[in-house]
Image (cartoon, rainbow, N blue to C red; front, side, top):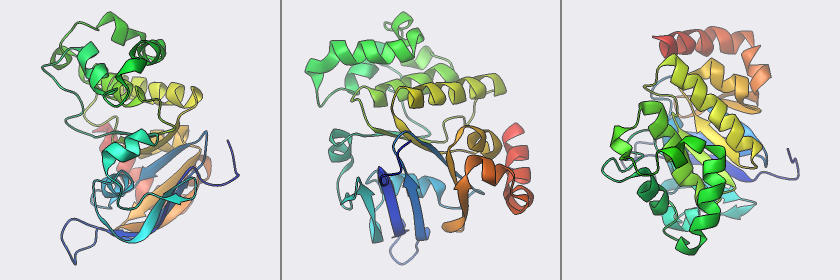
Length: 246
């Protein structure tokens, strides 16, 4: 991991969906090269809004989002994809009527000539996608669809991957498979920023963690430090972890 400066940074963000009703209030985070950073917190804390603001899906009213120190505020999602930012939403993250191969092709719409190289790289990470290439995405299991969604986002060879609730709705077995896939993606050289409902497991794999509450930073530190912080455990991890198991 590099400490030369953040690869991706949110500075004192104020953002929301309805004018005058901010969801994020002075919210900040940093993602360094080679890291997995996790964002956890109670429902309604602004976690997904923070990810969407970083990807240009929610207007930033104040503060800034920077990639390698350069402002990305106001840029559209397709421009951010071209700059090396990949995004996987929580729902609607595959085209169910298209085949696995066609979904991956959609992930490379900005650079279709790189298909052979990028397809080989993605199926090296996720061999099952090669086996299922001709199958309709809608026929995949929940865990396989999540794998496909990550694979499609990786087709543009991003330096940063934003994941919104990657384990949501999955069985415990598939949840663990998804976390292992995230670790493998990170080992392949992609920095990962994820919002996650399974707070304890998220912080176990994260190098850096952020606890959001009511749209602002409640706690931050290494994943290990937050797991061992009695205040964080008492206020957040106990209830969040129980909710994730139910």
